[in-house]
Image (tube, rainbow, N blue to C red; front, side, top):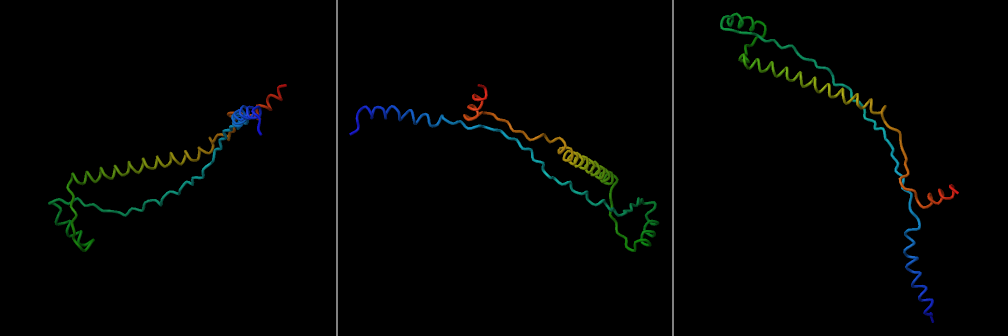
Length: 146
């Protein structure tokens, strides 16, 4: 039969054993930073433009007959695509706007290409830092100090 004394000792030791088990070993927390160089290939430039020649004729009532004779000799068929002066000006402005847009896109592409090339030069070194010493590390430090 279990004595009252041994039961009392077991009841007092049981909470002590259970509560000290979690606090006995602390893990060591290490923060490690690895910088990975990404391989982003720079794409080749597209093929340059090969634009075809376009002729514009300024036709007025004064030169219409002469123009029709000359145009039929050159082309064989007479077809008209007419633009008013304001529409021609608008078309000219649109071409200028396209030129501006393409130039800005080219500048943007060059900026990102240079950023990719220079990024690899400015890559920091890999680091490893102990944020919290574990129980074993603290014991080693105590032994080393003595």
